[in-house]
Image (cartoon, rainbow over all chains, first blue to last red):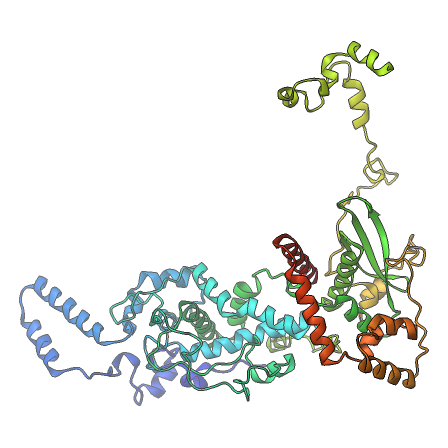
Length: 405
Length: 199
């Protein structure tokens, strides 16, 4: 599949100045579009400033002129809610972050600076990271979910939700940004170094659960005693199985964790827009999939032995039978039993415990995990077909579904 | 009598119970002397596992002796592999030394399932349990109809009044528990929940 030309469609998410520039593009659009640096800020420049500038040109003393210039610069910066775009090139923090993360050189510092401006700091959609974060969130969740579903096709839905949260949940992304060395600014503003993450903090004592307006798509969400099935979470809830909340009120602050997560998502979106799909996927593999997650620890069974019996009945295996493989100290204070679960002559699982019941439950649990954690050989994800010269697609293994009891 | 005569002849250190309590720390722990060195050494001389010894193989090979541990859950049992998976054919079926049927079961007697109750019996179970729940408890019904109490629970439910009475009885029993028993019960419950998380 051919790669899409960036310039054609990225205008909706990128402001004119941050767009990648090529000669043809500049030639076509420069006449009609003003660049972001020339876009007038919210308060239009007062004519008095121009007068002062003109006057400063006449000044003979270069030192005084420099000081006046810096004062004017600072004054103009204070007008903006977030740092101006030309400050990005001068920020050492931003350049260091760019180099530290091995970001592609096609991703300009200006866009990197934009990913660090939260919507609560700058409500102007041309300068905050909301659009980039939406794209980045979709990419992150898509790549994670296809990886999970292709690698472990039999995982129960609750475990998939938990694994998604562990890979690209807000907590993980916030921890990731801390590991990258992204610092937060105490207060957002035009004079702040663009290398800081800028967002408006939540007022202390705010009830975060009530701070949202509007409601999610789930009907009767307020009804307390309605059962929320796992299947209904696919339709009504977000990628992590949590209820979708309405958008925040304008001018309200955001928690630190959420602002950090949004910045990481925005960076993913920015990489995708500027450097294309391969770079975005590489970034995802290096920063998200490389984190170790033991999926076998995400399970929680209440009735493993019963579930295993149901599973064997469904798959037409012989009825599972628990047998003692070995034991020691049955009459002592600390006995140990090793129990295996057999279906016919095949051992399905093995567990050790201090009582026969515990060993049997653990063995049934091990057998169920053996079933759910099946992973096919040579796993390929659907998005690998987007690479050039990809081998023809073989259908991935699709399982019947989890055991319902 | 014989022991009392022999005892004084032994060295004093060999009879630690005769010593005062402050010498316990000194006497504890076996000492190795020149005389006992050979005996200790012989006892520690355990024959290594056969796989560590010189093998008949002439070429280089790897000795793999993993410590005994629970099998990994990421290793899917052969029976759970789908028919299309190549690992099914690759794993050679080695004849297992242990016969599953020869191993002892977890329960002393496996209850035999009779499947002898018909719908009219089940109706009778329901009417009996609703009519006089104090007499016809689950266990009495199970004994009469020769089935398990679990089956009775699957077939019918106790009346709400009986449930209320049973709840009050349980509360009365639990009110007599002291902190130790209560905590022990709670800990047992927590431990049981931890099994399901494999902790």
